[in-house]
Image (cartoon, rainbow, N blue to C red):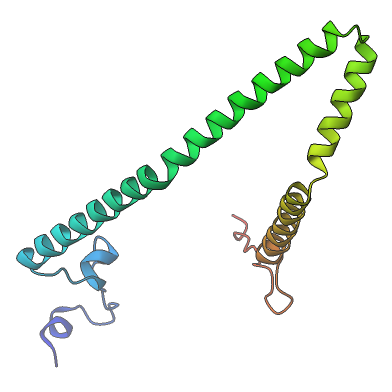
Length: 153
């Protein structure tokens, strides 16, 4: 008979040992400190390398694209101001200028690139909506969690 059973009073219940302070004490085995430092250093080296590569790629590709977009925007603004000045100097009234500007803007939005981009965004949004709906809707095989009420006091 174990020692703990002999020390108990007859008819007394067996006392369970105290629960561990956290699951970490029971389930997680920690690596040796030297190995943990090596893994942490390796992680920092990998993260730093990834950051340097990301900054380098941004500098190599992002800066020229941003410069090209800025120059293109400035050129469009300059062309628009010159067109408006020329239209006003020829004696056109404001409705004629507004109609011509509206037709030019509409023609810009009806290019194949603009329509393809808009169509692609619509398809992407629809796919995201379907995926989100499937993620958030309850599955037919899974029962909804039932609430358990406390017994009356």
